Length: 306
Image 1 (cartoon, rainbow, N blue to C red):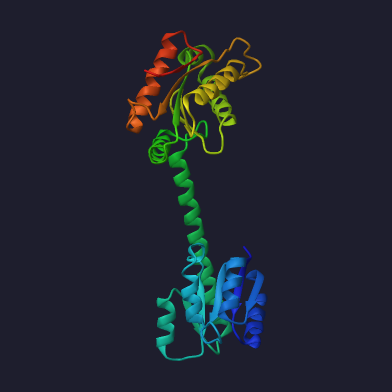
Image 2: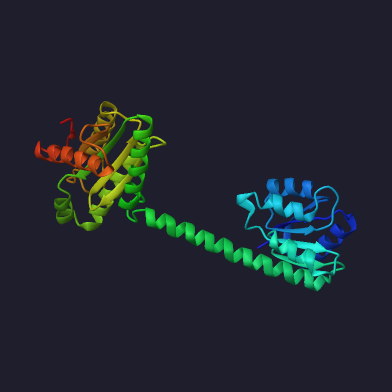
């Protein structure tokens, strides 16, 4: 895949020479050039090249200062830098490597060696990028319910802990909705598990439509869901729950299944509350309210204000 390179050298002749070598190899699509470290640092931040070739001896900001400046940019710490030096002694090379350079070439350089070293660094960067992508994917999978795409119980617990800490620190209210699909076992037994999965997915889509930017929703398992609503008091949280309940009541899962009617029961709890000191307390109070909603006939919202 064609990528980009930043060439930093105070000699225009050297920059042209390097560009010609790399053009012939068709390694890069974009070439950026700078005549000193300051200009190179600005270009590196603006263009985010895949690799940097940097001379050590330059007026103003030399290559060593450039490496130190680049190390302060977290988003560029994995960008490979090959330093170019005209010195034969190893001191400058070692210093450059200690400051974060990935490799070095010595002037006058051999075109074959330059290409080989650049190809090695590009391959390493490609492997690093793929590893980071895989790690991001694994992290997302560890937080996500595979059926609905919502957060899972583990992520909900982490979110609730953070929002509880924020509520204690700021004094803003925090509400938790626990939601249960009424008679879900009967839906599975009557219409099949594939239809049951469709019900859960539709519920997830409905919940997300009612979320504000700072809210979150999770599937806890089975037909149980939780909505964490920061900066939300009981009347507002109850209103949100009631709007969701009404929408679910009118929800069509499958046009061919006219007999399939889906309803939910919702328990609402809040912090601050005299019985709530920890996240588990908030979950307990919401669960108690959910139990009341079920006991009172289902398809309703109940808030625990005991």
